[in-house]
Image 1 (cartoon, rainbow, N blue to C red):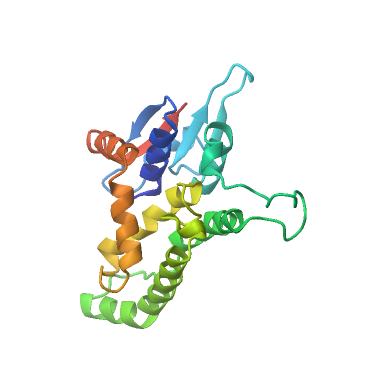
Image 2 (image 1 turned 30 degrees about the vertical axis):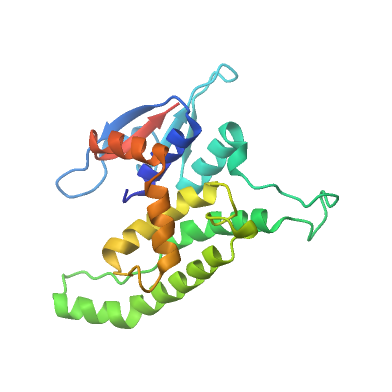
Length: 226
């Protein structure tokens, strides 16, 4: 997987929620199909539409974090860590470590996905681009990977996922920057073994494999209907 949209498809497979994929192909300019603006004003994916007997209007949700939160709250409460420690319901500071990590990483994942990169009106040579990467981007990548490697090393209850022993919505959002990082930033198994092993574990999940198969048979931008 290499896009946030594909992570949403993986989540739907984990939750075993029936859904329909609607394909929107990018144009020759690599921009999203203008018809996506008929679904959501921003014209971007991922977007989901939800139809229920409880409402006459179709619910439309955009942005990966908001979609993951909605789906987990309604269809996958098991993917949201326990909020409070026993006997500390509603108390400030009474939150579980797992829940605090979950809340933080849900926002962190969205931020790292939008990490600042230089932009130029005219193309630059490969040599100049490589220098920009070395001086501006690589230190930020290393800082992020160092932090996330330590988060996996100290996961609650010595779990294999960011928030503990169970897969959470945060894991759904975090896989995209890791997969992109493997292909674009060149981090290695030797430098970040826990992240590398984490990605391998995710790739072995049946729901992930089902999502990958559906993506391979389709391709492009998706609108997801529930």
